[in-house]
Image (cartoon, rainbow, N blue to C red):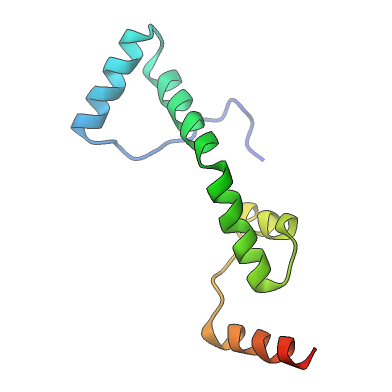
Length: 96
């Protein structure tokens, strides 16, 4: 598990968005990296309901709990279901 002090990097934003980030940070008198982290956190909070719905969809499709699916995603154990796997689930559900 990375420490809170470990840096995580994102790809270059491109000239326009990098300039926008620079301007935002100057207007708010904070470092560019702090402004980037703040903006990313804000956007992730906005998307919480949508993200949770997507995780729940994947969990329901697999017949597992939200928490189990969340853990699979965090641990990078998730992989998309193949059509064969999905067909097998339908057969099991029909037999129940």
